[in-house]
Structures are given as structure tokens and as C-alpha cells.
Length: 107
Image 1 (tube, rainbow, N blue to C red):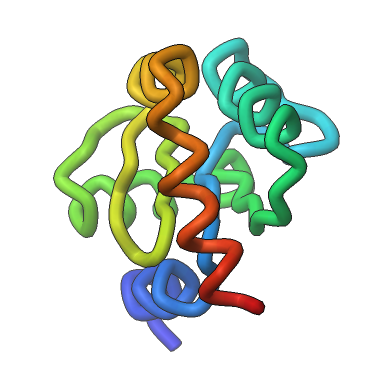
Image 2: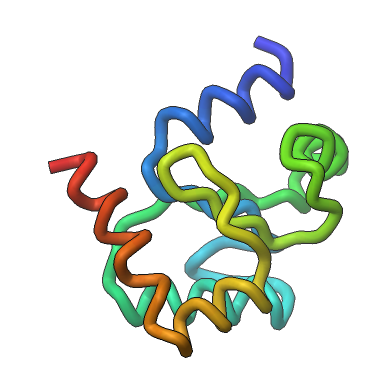
């Protein structure tokens, strides 16, 4: 399976997926760490993909999402955004309803 196809499949398969630098257990940049902190706050289950394992992931992901930076959070197949957007939605109380829809999808 080609990498671009794998990215599309992963985003479609996992209700919440975070493309990040490092892992959710060990984020390797402040922006990735910030999104992990927000997701951990809500206690949701999510898949993490370490883009540092293969530089081609970042290229293919940016082509797929039209978003050049990492991290990238997808919920129910839709790009939510990067660290700034995720934190802003969290602080405004708008992220929880988005995450709840993903959790309900898996129930």
C-alpha cells in the first residue's frame, strides 16, 4: 500500500488521529505536546502517528490536508487543525462536542 493511501485509510479508520512529532507517550516538540495535553484532558482514545519516523509522511500528509505544519488532528476524517487551533477550541469549550461525536461513532 502506498503511503498516501495508508494516510487516507488511517484517517478514515480512526475516529481520532493525531499526526505529531514523537508519540503520545513521548511528544518531541512543544506543539505536539500541547495537543497531547488537551486530548489527555478529555481522556479520549486516539491513534498517534510519529511523522519523524519517515520524512515522506509529512510530505504526503501536507498534500492530503493542504496544511503544512505538524501536529495535525483529525476527528471523524476531518482536519481539526494544529496546536493553536486545538488549544483555542479547547479554551472556548468547542472541542469537547467535536471529540464526543468521535467517541459516539465508536460506541
